[in-house]
Structure formats: C-alpha cells, structure tokens
Length: 343
Image 1 (cartoon, rainbow, N blue to C red):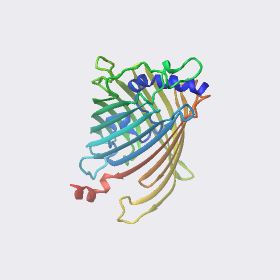
Image 2: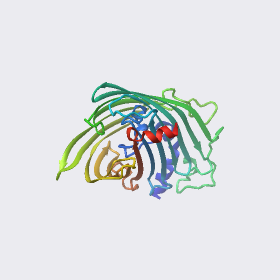
Image 3: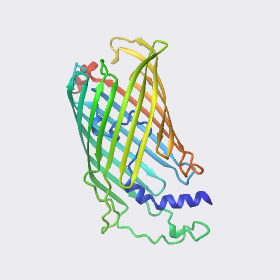
C-alpha cells in the first residue's frame, strides 16, 4: 500500500519533474558535455562514452536512462600545448517510469585558447533538441485513487492536445584550466555554463505556456599527484552546483587513482604504452545521496560504476541508483595517420 501511494505521487509529478530537472550523472568524471560544452575535447583527444543508469527500482516502475557522447578536435596537432577547436555530440534518453520519457540531442563546439604554457581558456556553444513524450494510458492519476487503492477503471480527468513535444535548445559555457607539464592531468579547472537559454515551451496543451527553466552549472575540480609505493597516483576533487528553477543540487567529493601497471606496447599501436589505473571515490549530493564510485582504466579504455545510496525521505522505499559507464579515448596528437585517412 505504501509503495502504491509513492508510485501515484511520483507519476503525478512527472510532468513537473520532466520539465524542471535535467538528467544528471553520478559518473561526473567522464560525462563532461552534460555539464559544460566548453569541456569538449579539452585534452586534445578523441573520446567516446556510453552510459546506463537505473534508479527507484522498488518504487513502482524504475526510472532508466541511457546516454552517449563523442568528442574530437577538428584537426590533429602534434603539440599538446596548442590551442584547438573541438566538436562534440551528446545524447541521452530518460524513461520516467511507464508514463513518460525525455530525449535530448545536442551538437557542441568549443574553442580552446592557450593563455600561457600551462593554462587555457575554453569557450563552448551547444545547439540541439529537447523532446518529451507522455503516455496517458500508462499513467496513474490522483483522481484514480478511490481512497483505498488505485483503480485504473476510473477516468483520469486529463485531456492533452499531444503526447509529444520537441523543441529547439541552446546552451553555452566557459572553462579555465591549468594543466600538468605533460598536459595529461588537469591540475585545476573552474567553469560556468547555462543550458536551455531560449527557455523552450514544453507544455502538452496548445494554450500552455510552461517553459523549461534555464539550468545553470558551476563546477571546480583539482588533481594532486603523488606516489604510492613508487606508483603514479593522484587525488581528484570535484565541486558541482546546479540550479534549475526551484531545484538546486550541490555535489562534492573526490576519487583516488593509482597506476598498477605500465609496460611498452608495439610501436604500431595507437598508444605507446599499456597502463592500468584503478580508482575509488565517494561523493555527497546534497541531502539526496552518498555516491560511491569505482573506476578501472586500461590503456585507452575506462569502465566506471557508481552507486547512489539514498539518504533522503525515500530511503525506506528506494534502493538508490546504479550507473555504468564505458569510455574510450584516443590521443589525437599520436594518431595523425588516422585523421589523415578520415579527411
């Protein structure tokens, strides 16, 4: 009975949730375009990510999300400290229980400007679409609860002109970064971005004027290199703040990564070395959840797992969220032949 009440409350709020809060990832280390278009290929590389997230499995139908992104510099460069232009693509789809879904597609461009030998300023711009769909037949409405239980035979009392809405979307961002000597580690980053600048109308009715609120993102991160038993290691710390309408999210935490192995590979390989890194971290997202992260990086591939342990009022009826992510990175300055063939 208690879970049924939670289900009805959540599904009744779906039109509000879907129009007021964007998708968020707990593997914030790799899903950069989700938070700032100026982070596109900032390390002068080519990167691809895929992600899957599921949450609230014990509260009615679970919320699932899949995401994918790709980023690359426009032209190959040999020097790691050169400024460069980069392009990226970001997409995600959220299935909001049985009742609705949100789909976002964006193309992002960033100009990375070298300020000094080890620092840069990046300016980013993104254009795309933001779409929502709503399945009235699979919905559960407050008017269908007869006081004792949910009765699907009762009329919902809701009338919609259309169950789909797709609009144009635009965002922008800026990032300042300080790199290590080899430019492979970002010692410090700070950035600001804004999404849905045009505040698209997301109402399902012709007379509706509900607009998608602007999402503002502030973030800062740092990395401190050190050694564990002569193995290269570093601590990564991140602070992330997001505001969208009446919703605020503050996330803080860090991860420790250490190198377990590095050996020479064949000279024909894209990477001259095969390395193995492992990382573990913990983050706190406001009063919502503790987030535990694990990462394994083998050469160009990175696998990440995150678990959100709910600490909010839903903790007694929710098992939290699980998120998987797989990333692949090819350093562009070491793959000039590949890009000459593509061009």
